[in-house]
Length: 226
Image (cartoon, rainbow, N blue to C red; front, side):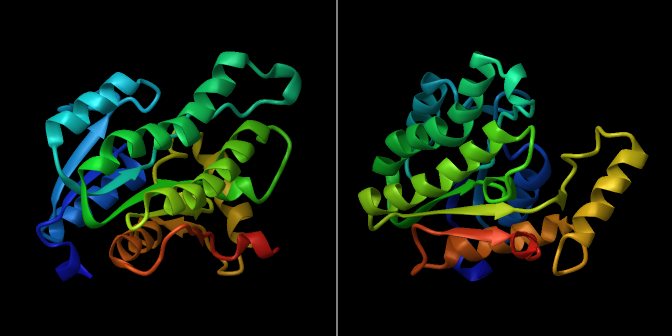
């Protein structure tokens, strides 16, 4: 797999931390030329809710081989507490953003190139308080299939992780985080939560899997089957 990616130009949107940072690190180890983009704190600025930043980055980078986006904007509240702008932000990150990345980068991508987006298990496991995130993640899974058809032979795929110890939950008090992980492990057929390695392994496999497109790969330890 490393040999397939050596020398490739790979853009990681949301690559400054968590899953995105691990994917970027793997790319550099594999000898790829990795460009990390974020809304702030990065030399390459991309805000997937702002088309001008996407267009500017595409013009600056020129030809790329793979584009990865881990962008998200959560709005986890009960339906009576929903806010219009935050609903729009969630769908902008998961649906509109990937469409705009495809619009501006697909014409600059080499043969054998691909897009990889990130959905999540909540798209298949509805629960109170996550209606926006769940619907946006499920919509992204549909989007990759449609984009794969329209952009062929470029490939388009998504990963839908389960609860993963990626740093995303580090803001919780230690007891709450530990309880969350215990519940997630108990709900998993694998008997544990995910790791950065689990998700990054799947991501790098998909970048090199030249006969896989239009798919959402579930990296959730079998949680959907409980």
